[in-house]
Amino acid sequence: MKISYDAEVDALSITFRETTVTTQHLAEGIAADYDAEGQLAGIEILDAVKRFGGQETLRQVIIEGIGLSVTSENITNVEKTTA
Image (tube, rainbow, N blue to C red; front, top):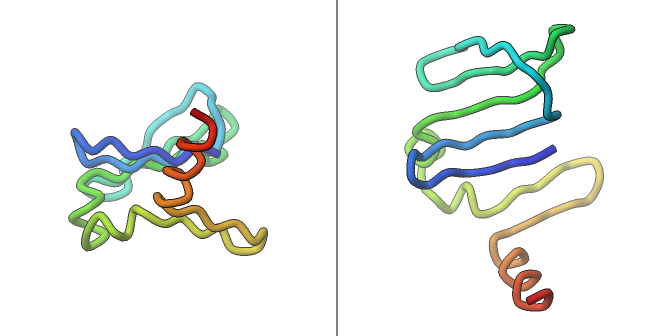
């Protein structure tokens, strides 16, 4: 799974798997991508910062159930130690 944010267009994208997709628009600025078997392959949300109430919401990702929490501070620290 890949989560990416494009600040230039304020779009949040969650890709569950890389594949050829068909896009279905669910609501204004929200789209879901489905693979050939109809399985969800990704989600795109436009105007993400506005929808989520600010950039702070995008700075932390918590995946419940597997004990993983990633913040922008963790990413910065990883970049510094691997550079």
